[in-house]
Image (cartoon, rainbow, N blue to C red; front, side, top):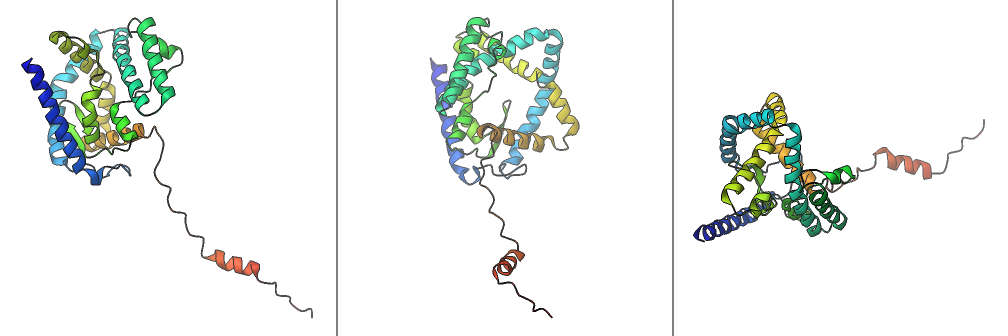
Length: 269
């Protein structure tokens, strides 16, 4: 009971703190440009956290994930991905409903029901075989849909890149995992660990590629994250204002006047 109260108190403090950060970042709460947009006022701190995460990744997650890829058959790893993705579909349906996307919400619910009933609890992705591809929507996208700007870029220990908006949504997005519907603490920890390792194992090839091509890995990942989140919120559309129309060429008025003037008749000689 005491631990539950403590958890609720800590969650409340975190929520209040992040709301204060969000209000304090009102001047930088819109992504209106490409890479290099100044949404990283805490870069010095973020780089320290990033370095910590990179060290932890190299020392623990990469070796464990590499061993996981070698030991666990591909078919089993696909089943694990499907299992966690099935819970994400249910949460995606809630967010599509909150965004007023009724057709997508219905599709997510149908995906969840189909894979739960006919896909062995979500281990098989039967819905995709029927032509219903997954399009995940989280609470951060819902907040962005309703006009909440991203706020400042943040790198959290263990959790990685985020923004103030996504950080506010993160505790709720974490509810869409099977670990939180199980009362056994050891089982919860095991499922959470499996989800982390399975996710990291799927990113091993991408991380090696980034290591090879990125001169500044921190900047590369930051800009990629911010642009991807912007694209997800806007559903891949460019909704920025159109640029002002260009003024007509300088020769146009003269040409118009010349065209409207009576033609000069040259007398015959």
